[in-house]
Length: 278
Image 1: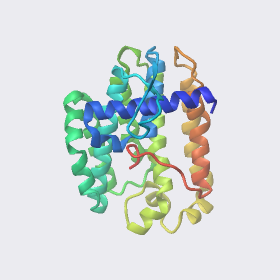
Image 2: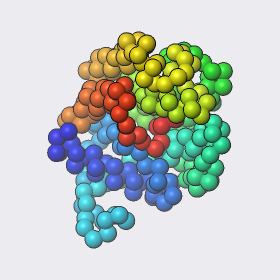
Image 3: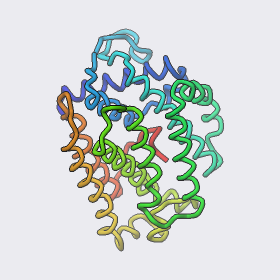
């Protein structure tokens, strides 16, 4: 990543953190996600909304000012999305593993504030998460079918955010990003899900045991699933109009996502965001 892109990404991250606190409450800031920072960068560029960076203080750095993206309508919308997705992620933990009740309680007020500010977002998330839950309960053995609700959720949310800037290519790109997030997390969680007897589409499709053993027999097919997503994302990315330099988002979509997938395939630990992870 270029230095300029790193500065922009960190400024967007800090700006999103402040916006979450202002709109959804201070507790909701603990759910801040790097994935949502990437979403903010993508939306700003597609919607021709320049990111204004200011040097300001923050709670973690009270003595020195840091570059922080100024608040705007897009950042406030993404802040609500971050809170909604975090709350449903915690709800998923409670239903699947019986853990996280206290954490979910801490986010409940933020969830209500986000839902009041963006009821359409909340309804999109609720509907698709219900579909996802139903597929998990039936132990869906189709990897593509299992990932579809999450991909459609991100696509529908992108349409709601982009408004007149939404196109068939933006929708398809966001669908692919959502599908990748779901499947990358599922593959990364393979061994843990086998151990805890949680639903995992790769376990249902290819059998239990270990991820290493599953990949020894099915690596070519699993790689094909991810490579198909990357190819489609690249094709749609080229058809989208960006109003500013898009090195940052290109780097994440074209290089970062494949690199993260390779790390998972080789068994390396991957840093994972709070709100997108299922």
